[in-house]
Amino acid sequence: MRKSFLLTGFAVSAAIVFSCLPGLQGQEFEGRSLVKAQLVADTSAVVPGKSFQVGLLMEMAEGWHTYWENAGDAGLPTKIVWSLPEGFTAGPIQWPTPKRLIEPGDIHAFGYKGRVMLLSTIQVPENISTPTVVLHAKASWLVCKESCIPGSEQLSLELPVSNSAIPASEPIFEHFRSSLPLTDTPPFSVSWQETPEATTLTLKGVSESSEFDFLVTSGGGIHPQI
Image 1 (spheres, one colour):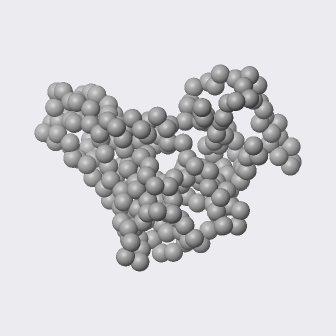
Image 2 (cartoon, one colour; image 1 turned 180 degrees about the vertical axis):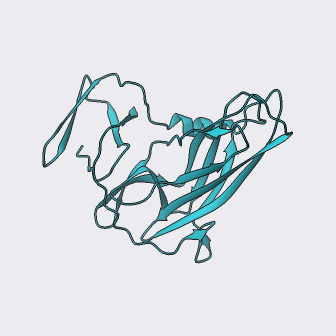
Image 3 (tube, one colour; image 1 turned 60 degrees about the vertical axis):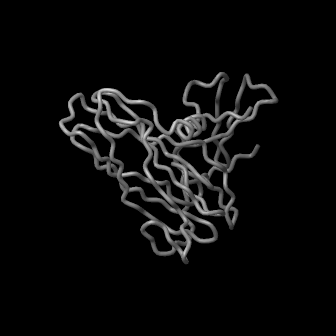
């Protein structure tokens, strides 16, 4: 079984060596939609004082990809800038485990193909004076294939306010929650040694049949040798 753990605290340099075409709102290129983006809530209604999750659901055209929070040697992570009603706050993006991508020129990157949902937890105030609330967000991203194109879109999501709610869009939220890297203390010891030539990571207490993804949350330029 493959597991993914986040190891934080690395600081290494990243090289941005891609070429970009002009940015496009809504991501239409040569008559083709490269990225379709929308906001999806995991609840049927907003309940005062009760948090819920909203996902930025992105669907990329075949062969194209967007990037994880650490894009790797090149690329830019997707960003979300929220504009929320008074008293509401949004937590940081929760990133599903990315794929390791090898781009032209032996550029190592981390990102997503096909479909991904980036999760954010919305904290709700105890008192809401309106019958509905509207969440606004500007999503911006870089989508790449042979070339890279920055895109962005203004998105909104309207939800009723109620004293109770039921879960919504459960299958897709369950799928992407299950693909979040584990942030708990791993059931093995981790150590690393840095030299001018390389950083060596050592895992002890791991069976030979185990498989792990090594994800670095800051910086770039790391090429895992497995």
